[in-house]
Length: 422
Ligand SMILES: NC(=O)c1ccc[n+]([C@@H]2O[C@H](COP(=O)([O-])OP(=O)(O)OC[C@H]3O[C@@H](n4cnc5c(N)ncnc54)[C@H](O)[C@@H]3O)[C@@H](O)[C@H]2O)c1
Image (cartoon, rainbow, N blue to C red; front, side, top):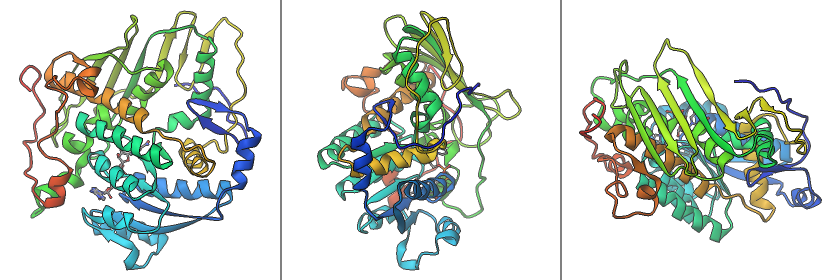
C-alpha cells in the first residue's frame, strides 16, 4: 500500500495519545532531565527481542543516554548464547529457563523489554510492574480474554506507580500513520463509514519436532503454529491492522462474526485464513482478512472509507476537502526506534505513556475474531471484557504459561478447531 508522505528529518517531538505534537518547550526541558545512563534487560531473545534491544539502544543514542544491558533471559540456552555473541555479558547476567524472568526482576534494570511468545506476557508484565520496571511489551500481550484483562489490571498498577508502558504497535509511532490519524480527526474524509484491514502473507516458519524433544519444548520452539502460544495468526500478526482500525475509529468493535479454516498448514493447530466482519456500531463495519498461505497474493495494510473521502492507513488520502494539519516531526523515521524513544522519554518527563488498556482492547478484538471463527458464533466485545455470565468470558486454553514452567505440557492434537463443534 502507498506511503506518499515523506518522512522528515529529526526534530524533538513526541507522539502522545494518538496525535504527534510539535516540540513544546516543556518536552525539550524535560529532555534535559534525562539520566546519563539507563539499565535495560530483555526477556525473550529471539528475532524480535534481538531487534527490540538494538532499537532501544538506538533510541538511547538519539536521547543522548548511555544504555547498559544488565540481563538477558530466555527459556533456551542456545538463544541466549546467540544474542550474547553481540553483548558478551558474563554468565552471571544470563538467565535461562521458565523462571528466568523472575531473575531479571531482581536486577537493578530500569527497563524490561518483553518479547517471548505472547502467552507468557501477562505473567511477565505483572512481575515487571510488581518490581517497579518501565516496560516495553511486544504485541500481542495475551492469547485469551483472561490474559488480556490481566494486562489491563497490571496496566492500572503501572499507572499508580508512575511506570511507563509502551506496546510494540509501531504504526502508532509512524509519521505517515500519525499524519492520517490527525487528518481524519480534522475531518479530511468525514466520519469513517467502513473499511478493510488485511494481513495476507505466508506461514512465517515451521520448526519440526526433533527426536526425543518433550511436548513442551517442541510446542514452544514451534510456537507460531500453536494457538495456545501465539493466539493464532489473527492475534499474533493481524493485530497490527485491527489496531489501526480501532485507533482511527477511536473505539473497539462491538462484535465479530467470522469464519476461517485450514487448507495447507501441516504443523500445529491453527487456521490458515480468517475473514471477520467487525461491527463497530453506528452502522460502521470493518472487514478483516488474514491469511498465511505460501505462494498466494500478499497484501498488508488498511483502507478506510469516510463520508467525504477515503484513505489508506499510512498512505494516500483521497479527499476534495482542503484540510491541513501540522507536520508530524519525529525523532527518527524508524517507527520501531521511535517507540523506544517515546517510552524512555516518557519514563523521565513526568508523563509516563501507558499503552496497557489500549493494546489489551485491541488484543481482545482479535481474540474475539478468532473465537467467532473457531466456534462459528457471533461474539460480542462485552462477552470478553465485562459480561462475566458469558461462556466466552473465562475462556482459557487448556495449556497455559504456568504449565510450561512446571513441565506439565501434553501436546494437543495438531488439528484445527471445527466451527459449530468447537
Ligand atoms: N512488532 C512487530 O512487528 C513484531 C514482529 C515480530 C514479532 N513480534 C512479536 O514478538 C514476540 C516474539 O516473536 P519472535 O519473532 O521474536 O519469536 P522468536 O521465536 O524468534 O523468539 C521468542 C523467544 O522467546 C523465548 N521464550 C519462549 N518462552 C519463553 C519464556 N517463557 N521465557 C523466556 N523466554 C522465552 C524463545 O526461546 C525465543 O528465543 C511475539 O509476541 C511476536 O508476535 C512483533
